Length: 213
Ligand SMILES: C[S@@+](CC[C@H](N)C(=O)[O-])C[C@H]1O[C@@H](n2cnc3c(N)ncnc32)[C@H](O)[C@@H]1O
Ligand SMILES: [Zn+2]
View (cartoon, rainbow, N blue to C red):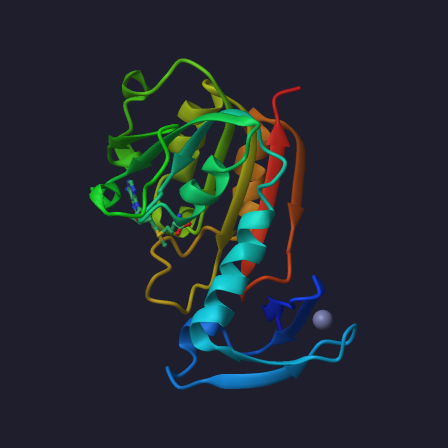
């Protein structure tokens, strides 16, 4: 399955990328690959860190269209959080996670606040009354009762943009029922304009967008 995007941005500004079967996270630490920019013909060697960062950046760029007050669920170390906090159209980000990861150095923006909570029994009174966007990356396969969560969040989030993966063979895939179609159908009960797509960023990933109107 060639679905993982790998590459770098050349000094000439050209983005040099290809789709690989190997996920950047699974490559050996001494991995390196020499590529040549098709535009300026400069050679460049990418290492594992650069490959991982490029891959994450491509995933994060899918969120470039969001704005306003954002609710992010399952923020972990705040990688996506930090990316979207740089978006001038984003006023605030409320991040929810069951682990208190965000005390770590990764959360840098004053726009961001953290709420410690279990999404399986989320009390939305802990959150603001309205958000322009609900976002998440790689979270729903950890949630057993997705419908209960979506029902609650649909009352406070106007739009949805979520990037998740589903592979029931993986031990990290806790909810073996959270197929992209099933997740899409859950959102369709509470939202309009549902779109499901499969961006070529990393294996098994899917993107859902939706809005209230
Ligand atoms: C794979 S990580 C997400 C990565 C992160 N969104 C990013 O962009 O780098 C999954 C996150 O979901 C959180 N999570 C899993 N189950 C949860 C639950 N029931 N309530 C709240 N957070 C949960 C985990 O603690 C973890 O931080
Ligand atoms: Zn170049």
